[in-house]
Length: 147
Image (cartoon, rainbow, N blue to C red; front, side):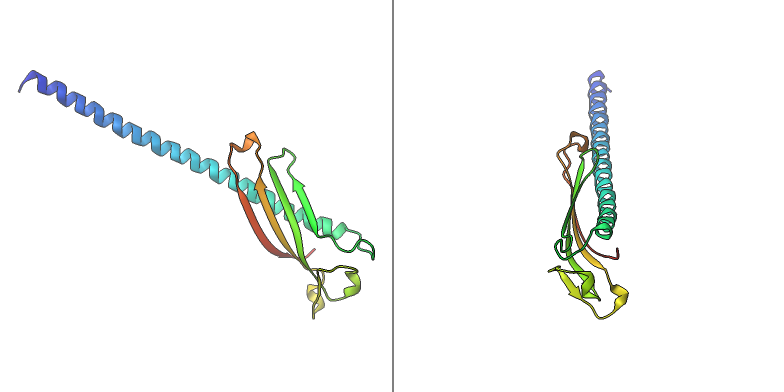
């Protein structure tokens, strides 16, 4: 066997090993990106659920009288300004329409078991905060809630 053949074999092995290491690093980078995306999406989903619960409390505490009508829009921003949530009340379901005065989105229902239910449309998204790492996530949910 000639001396030059050993050097060529060593170079080929080094190229092969460096190619495999490059693939491993690429896979690790994809894993990190996936973890970041999952984290920010989970945080957005948790903020959305918190916003829905706070909206229910706001609806419960809202003073409905003949001049105010009903609450239609509620906006929330996280304390660190990473997330914002816009909630629109699509429908109020009222058995006794006197409990929903001057509410153009109230609908009369046939049973008092669903009295006070509300249909909410929630849009929650990340802001351009540097803490979000440039990730923009937007989630939308329509849900029926009982305040």
